[in-house]
Image (cartoon, rainbow, N blue to C red; front, side, top):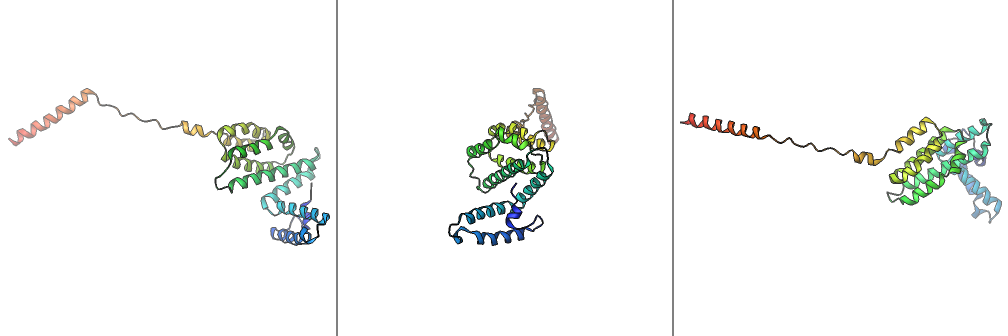
Length: 224
């Protein structure tokens, strides 16, 4: 797993301000415009930019730290590639979510569904299941579900079994996905039932007429 802290020359305890300062200094030093097209400097600049994309954002940095810690403790799998995979997907889904939220409501539903559906292929899900970092998976799932708010229920139903497979039985992740699967149509079906007014019976009408006539009769006699 790439050591982004080492690339920027900072430590895991460095503040966001210190990371930003280190990035700016290195970016100026290795910027291609200042190195006459030197390939080594260009590659170095790319690595610096990639490191800052992750460490410069608090959420991405937290996810990176989680996966980096997991890599050291997990001895059963080839965690280096697996954790890198998790970080990659976490960044991808975070980018998708941010793009959707910043689209001012103009979202291509079919295109959004396709990119999420393609990323959640069986092969990718199987790779992600092997990673035991539930916290990072939780962050990724939040981003996916947020993006899915902008697609129809029919398309959500296609993603639902894939997300359940990704949860791999974790009760907290499954609970989130179950809420996601609640159909809007269920709410639409729950239409208020109109209460029919009870029509008065003929006997009630006749009784009312008799009472009115009786009152009028008594008033007339009293006046006489």
